[in-house]
Amino acid sequence: MRLSDFIVQHVDRIVDEWEKFAATLTPAADSMNRVELRDHAKSILLAAARDMNTAQTKAEQIAKSQGEETGKTPTLDQAAASHGELRHTVGFDLVQMTSEFRHLRATVIRFWVESLTSPEITYFTDMIRFNEAIDEALAESTAAYAERVTRSRDIFLAILGHDLRAPIQAIGMSSEILLRRAGMSDADLGYIKRIKSSSRHMATMVSDLLEFVRSRLGVTLPVVRKPMEMTLACREAIEAASAGSPDCDPVFITTGDTQGEWDRARIDQMLQNLIGNALQHGAATHKISVTLTGGDQYVSLAVHNDGEPIAQEAIGSIFDPLVRSINEEAGTHNPSTSLGLGLFIVKEVVNAHGGSITVTSNFGDGTTFTVVLPKKG
Image (cartoon, rainbow, N blue to C red; front, side, top):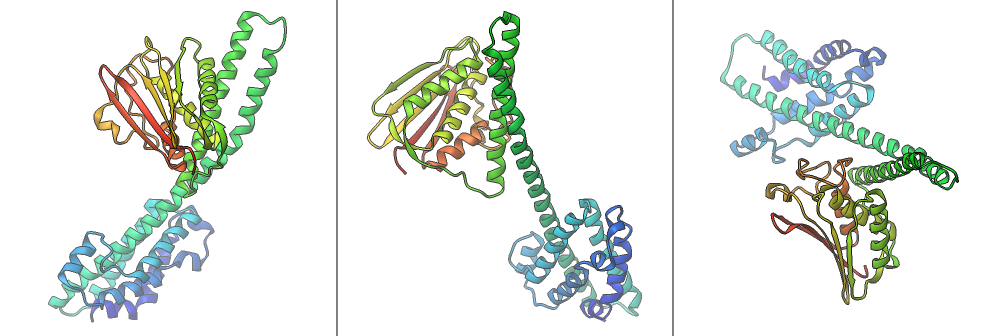
């Protein structure tokens, strides 16, 4: 009997074996009923059998073996993907889920071989097609499982970041109140200023984390454009950065008309991250400069710092999330407290405003990030 026909005739027997094995995958299986243990096993097997009976060219066979979409089986993919999602939901780990397919493959082959009386050359083709189908199902289940894991992690990070904002804000406000008290010693004032500065750093990191998670969950960065003065925003961002780094005095040069329509909160994020990046990674013995130039339809912002340049091989990934490619060995104004999200957030803000950002970095000239933003959307 051909393998596809065998699977159809003995599908319930095979699924019984699947159920017995799935029941051993504890602790998740301890709380699962019979239907949950069997899950999409029957659908996967019947879809695999239909796939095996479908004519396949040599090119399609090669394409399928390489994981390409050509020649894939939609019903098999759907059943396998649903299986991966549900196994994640009930608490199976990835090893347990993939072991189900290993056991299924072994069970089908064992039952089929035991039923054969004499081998035929066509059986080898059946074996190849069956293994292709199971590999395809395993790949789809694994991808769906991994996607659920990633989404669950992102949602957890979003909740964590959101809940952290309240205590961080309380720390900042409390330190502000304490700074206004009279009669405090210089040492006590120093401690409070350090608390305030640290809370500001934490707030920035949490904000960056939330923006990163939002992008991971497929939500575009929202912007609300209102008239604002970019020069004023730059001055305030530099002042805030200097408060956290009193030994640094950035040079600010502004020319032209810098009035436009932007989202002030997002622009503040962009400026804080760009200036903070320059302060953190610039040489400790050199100042940074911020140059703002206003034109008829655009403004151009350049943030420059001297010091160790960005490696050329890292330039292409400098705006990727969770990447910290700057040479940490160089002398810096500040130790690294970055999550590797600052420049990613900068890029997101620039894109949301329809602008562009470039970076140049080399020995002698230092590093310059240049942002060009249209004045209106």
